[in-house]
Length: 394
Figure 1: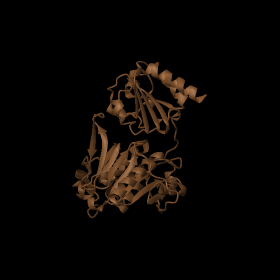
Figure 2 (figure 1 turned 135 degrees about the vertical axis):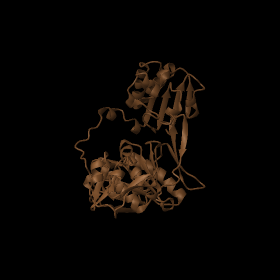
Figure 3 (figure 1 turned 90 degrees about the vertical axis):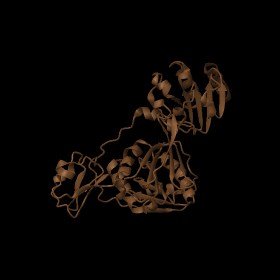
Figure 4 (figure 1 turned 120 degrees about the horizontal axis):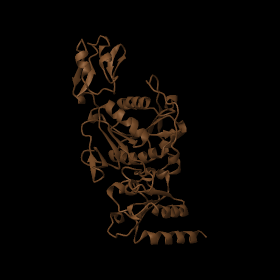
């Protein structure tokens, strides 16, 4: 159920505003209006002296299934530059749009016209672009308001965004305002051949199963996708498309971002941008084992990562963790040392171009996804590997 205001009955007495504990009622054009902060507590129903506030079935407000057409991706930008996850979403969105024989559109808030043109070259047919200054720093409210307005006007069938701090922050607001479903942290997306619906695939129950989720009755179908699990699309420098300028006038914004502070540790350990990763697990036996991995990483100009088991043991900080509860990575080479290959870990690294597994147990699940596997003692194998690499560099 949801709550609406009958505008004909509303007398603008503002009684409902005073009783709402969630600041979910505001005045618009001289009438009460229920915004996205409503928690369906029903306090306003009994307080309204005119009976203007009432419950309605939720599907009365949602976009009808047959109205949804086309695939949209939200192109996140940071400091004016389109984030890599947007290019990954364009790759996935292009594949889905081609299967549906539909248009692929990107939505870009902030940034420049040149960045919008780059999205066309990476596969978008259209780009809805707003260069308004309100988008220079990320703020949930204007982002969600404008995206909701665009979706209501153009009615896409599918909307994809990155499962990044920005996407996780404001996309749930968008889904709530549109009265539609949201599947978070997807690792795969497919189109059902029979119905044309989006199959949203993600780990569930701690990674022990892979769930396939549908949004059968509402549109758009919204999903956030973990960074580095999708491949970028094809870059065509001569590709042409349409860039639509979107005004951002009268967007309410009750908060102001004063300053953004970057975590210094994230600058030092940028797993998601690394080309080569050397990762260690419980098989290292102790924290000293990571000294060997750091030596190998230095030799390869690589970044060191870890499984959750190693992090839980306190052998290495959480910022190095790869897996369902850590970072999702997609390097050119991933070297897994002493990692058994639990589903929770493999979700975060199985899309790597080349996976090299080193493990004592020849039956370890990690070998099922490995490009190359070495069954043996990592404390014998890694020193030999370091020696050979150093010799090759001479």
